[in-house]
Length: 323
Image (tube, rainbow, N blue to C red; front, side, top):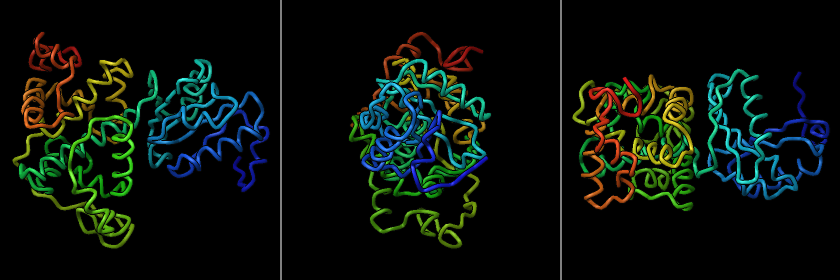
């Protein structure tokens, strides 16, 4: 059922097209302009971008209402998650059809109410990496201790620096820059950028925060069993980001946890973890770090309200979830 071609003519009778070229806006616009010219007027055009606003891509076409984000996770043959991102132009009908198609592919779709830079996945991912970076740069823990806490205390499949190595440190810096240039409060931290400047890009180059057997050859990193890093602190910035998305009705708590479980192989959702660790503990870390001059850590109104109402997570019977 598969046919390969280097000509756009192959799409002349397509009902649905998914683009997956590199993260370059001009390149994507050219692809969409070509698809717009060749496909029938009813064809839905989807982009697999992980960070570029869907509206920017849609503007290259004459069918802005039929352009949508359909962000698959790597490797897509294994990972179940698909983020479905309508732009400011996308019609409800197109959004619903895209969700149905994802389900027919045996995927788990998570729909955003509207597009935000980095969507759910990359916003949370970068926030985790930023706090990991801040802790190391401030001497609150070593790279190995941070990763040990992620793997042994939070039970994540990889440490955070290990995951950054696996994704590619150049990719991490690119996503980070997209978020910051589009208005997400930054966390000043240079260790990722320094590695990229040295061309230590992680697994792909054989060396990043850790050394690998050969370029492109990943091997699980050896980490200490014990770590002084508190997991509640490690997830604090990501939880704050998640609560901002809930507060703005972009997605629900359940949606965020679905993204982390099926997109990143977390053993449980980020907000479920936060409830277990205690939202008062997460909140205390946010307040403390915010007081040190990190604007991104300012607790959201939603978190403030939850703490005031005594919704501290599992121990109080209610947090992001009811127990």
